[in-house]
Image (tube, rainbow over all chains, first blue to last red; front, side, top):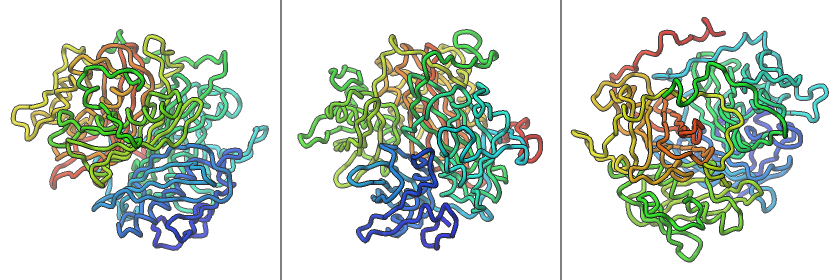
Length: 303
Length: 303
């Protein structure tokens, strides 16, 4: 139900991203404490709420572009759960796509700054198949063989309430981080859907694309890995059913990491992609896991 | 020379990205016709010029963050070569990173809207090695075996003047598009450097990350592929010498494509990454190339 013209459903996600016009073109958003990691609202949830505001504003500007295609999000400071104001600036309305900026404010402080490209996506049943896709769907064990990540894990230092909203089931082979034995591969993979059964849609994909733990947890035990800049693409309306999800670290360098996320739907289509740059603090003395011994080395077998 | 406190060099790139304060906190930028694809200024060039403005403003706000770490750029309308005004809004100054938005205007029209995360990168000689990198450097033939892409190709419909500024040498195996016989793999790879010998630096990486032809040219002959949203990360100051570059299409779906770009330096470090969402019009009757027959199919060997 991302079409802003349509009434919101009764799902937890639609309730938590509900906007109330303030009468001046901005929107009140109650940042929901149930979509958080510890005390901090999740970035994917905030991105989805801002996308809803951007879509409302673009449609109100007479552009038929109710769905986010691309989101680029900079997290300036973590908002607190509670009242916030979302200001939208429609940057351009076009024939096939429009752009809008949405900023989340608490008091006189901007907290999240996002720019969206919006368009119209056909519902899954009418969606065209991809013309060409390069990467193959990645392997993941059957849904029943994966294990759900709990919101309140035994012995965890804090609650991850988004895990009560998202039903995230991870491949047991990438759960080493939960017992202090990371696999060393820097990859998480599994299945994701809304816990209350709400179907996935373009706004839902924006949430799922930033809902996983950092894949660096499968490299080393560190503190939280705060996102500096997040980019997410919605490529198509997903077919029904849980989505297969993978998050992979590419490089850990000079206190920063990047990781990419993919979502594939039950029809075998790549429906969502994200990349993020985040900060990391590797504790002193923590050594990196070995890389694949078959990995080519520059100056030897590659050039 | 990306430190705004340092004088600009005499290179073509420094001249083309030179900013003149307008006295109100904005900057005059002469959009240079020599950094274009046909009549349209190149997106990587514009991104680098905006990054220079963002860095100037952040440093002027007393943050020691002269280098772009992340750039997210939305192209609203292509500017023309000639005068433009760059307005900068410092969104946040922090301890280890700052954020600023820079917008390029011509007359009363915003053309390019960019948000940057900025920080300080150690020069290559002092840069820490990556703690861990997942992907391996991709194979590419030796520099001497690759072929330089000309700015004015025989029989081409228009001049690509950035190819006179960038020295881009592509693997002969990915040059099929230049003779109407694309490889069908959706990948370009080779070496890139400044043609006038200017060393690469963080600003230069931003240009190189959006300087290649669309990798879709190696899938099918189409018209231009205009970028909707570009995200680029600068991970480290590059070591001297040409950079190995690869641009790869991931998916062509419903009139849009995404492609990723990587830059590796001579020390074997992944120093730059980019992803972009762009629009494409596949001419009627053009069939996609076959995908790898060994590619797994959902529901068969993968799940």
